[in-house]
Length: 100
Image 1: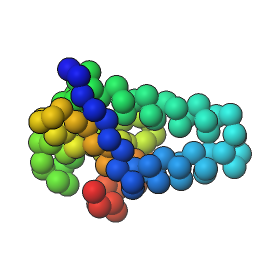
Image 2: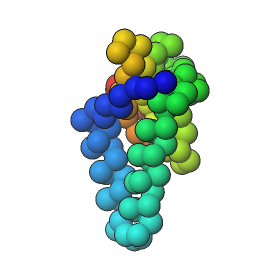
Image 3: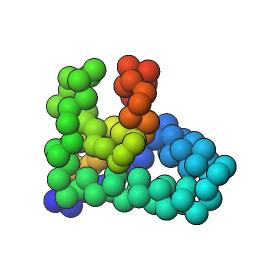
Image 4: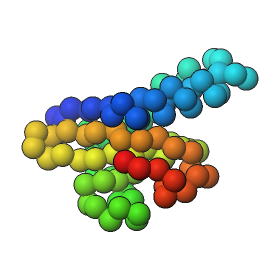
């Protein structure tokens, strides 16, 4: 499937916050982990429905995948095929704490 990945401004801020937090102690690890999160999100074009529906929202188009210990929330838009990366949050935090 050929699709487009769009990063919501809030997801980009989440990514920056995660990398900045890790960078305080481990700069090289921070960069590598940030790249891992980006690659995981962008891999969704191959199988966009592989993530689970987020129980809080119960919308089939709103899903999440894990990039331990983080969760990547995304929306699937079928026409044109688009994946919107909505949020990234630590798995220990409840999704109820976040709006999408």
